[in-house]
Image (cartoon, rainbow, N blue to C red; front, side, top):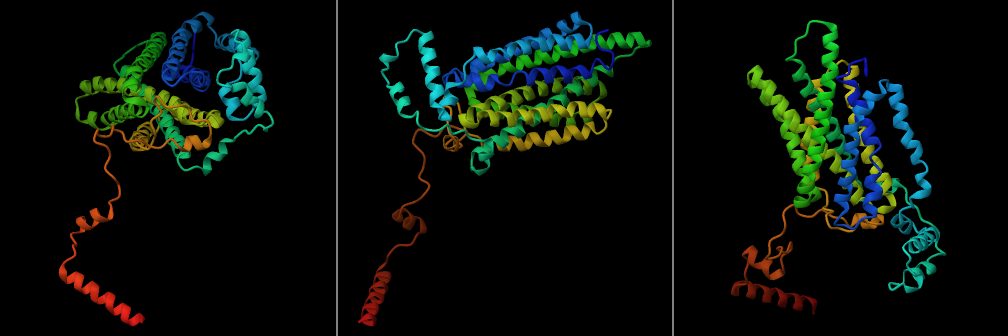
Amino acid sequence: MLFTAKPAETPFCFFCTAKYSGNNLQYHDGIEMCDPGNRFMVTMVASFIALLGQLLLPGLAALCRDWQILQAVIICPFIIMISFICIFPESLRWLLATQQYEKAKSLILQINKKNRVDSETDVKGIMPELERELTKKPKKTCIVKVVGTRNLWKNILVLCVNSLTGFGIHHCFARSMMKNKWENTTVSHNSDIHNMMLSSFYADYYTMAGIAVASCLAMCPAVGFMGRRGGLLMFMILTALASLLQLGFLNYLKETINRKFSIAFSIIGMFSSHAVGSLSIFFCAEITPTVIRGGGLGLVLASAGFGMLTAPIMELHNQKGYFLHHVIFACCTLICIICILLLPESRRQNLPETISDGEGYMRQPLLPPKKGGEQPLLLTNSELKDYSGIHETPVHRAASSESNTANVVKSS
């Protein structure tokens, strides 16, 4: 058969890891080539292509019949992609941000040649400016320099925790959904158990893939209407509500109603947690400066991978401590809701190029300001005097004049 050991549990970790480990550079290269208004939509198109591959993967596995053949078939396209180094150019934005002007100049000339653009008709004067900067040495920046910043490290840390929580709690909801489905099944023979597990694997897998597709579809209008931070906050609140209701509220219901509500909350939790994880990765790629965008994105992806690693760890321990595992991630969702309010909004904003540009991304109010303008934070001296209720009376004037006279006499 296709998979012999626990086909309803183990392949989920393999397929999800293959999906998210091979779909990370789209957030880096995609947004650097797009204008601010189309960055999110281009990234979502790449996400839908990745989900299409996820939907086709079980059919490919059924044709291969052996996991070793399947692994070889999956690796072959990656070997072909090594040749893409010679086909796809380096990011021009990164070359300019790291002062690699020689390579940037040659790349601009190649682009002009392919587009049949005459370099002499340079209206904005880009080429002469590059000629003047060719003497500068390249200046690459390490991700370690984030430690010396005030706002940038905080933003990256918040998104790391969000991605870890989103991908970590996703397995809790998936495990709860599969557990409630298996409690209703009764079989007699071992062959029937194997066939049911195999058919249940395909059903559960396509259910999870369908939820992921629905999550990506819902992210498009949500992020377009509420922005990056507002959309992330909304999906995190949904995840927290689904987990808390599943852990606490369902214990007071009857067993049959409990199972139905548990499956419903699991689907909602998988839907929102997938959106939280994907949006955290995209958000990090937008607010991290160009000089260290790869490093910042790598930290968030590493946190997402660590969250996904909790799934096979629970399988190795035979589901011991599963309830505590869910409780910890549910508490993390509450912490993330507060931390998301500290993030800036990057919608329709230019990408930061240097670390100083990334530091300039400050937190904006969640709600738009009133039309009348913001109230001043500091009061003037006259306003302060009126606010304190202290006014000059004739007695105060006489006392002040006497003190001034005494000071003059004493000084004389």
